[in-house]
Image 1: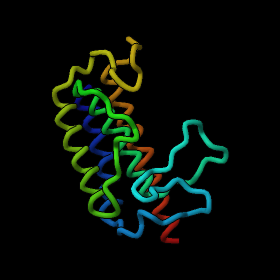
Image 2: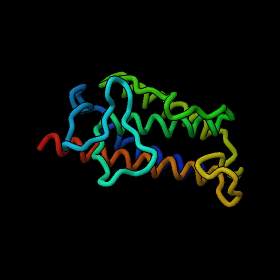
Image 3: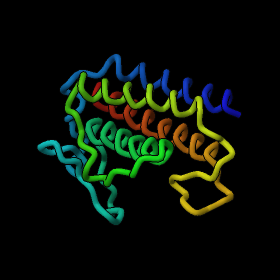
Length: 160
């Protein structure tokens, strides 16, 4: 199971790398619509309840979002006290954001290599014994795949 999860993760990561290699610093702040979720003065937009209509995210916001959920997942998986969403900052346009994501990837690979996949998932399904760490790893792959697709779509729209 670990090999399959790692293969799926590596496949998804390779798609993200295609986008990361092509992004410019200006791409991160491009707003594809009037109603967007962005990172403004280093602070990501957020709502505790889903707005209607849902704002279109910027690449900056999507990269922060990846960093946020992945950081909290790593906190849980490593036995650390999970950070609050507001404690997870965004490092900035271009290279700082790319480096942050690559560092999270490296940490995830280390955690995934040693973690007990049959243990109860510490996140995002706390206190549900039916959900294992393997489910959590599969969720990471799915969430990352969704966010990679969003970045790709934003790149296509900006290019058009």
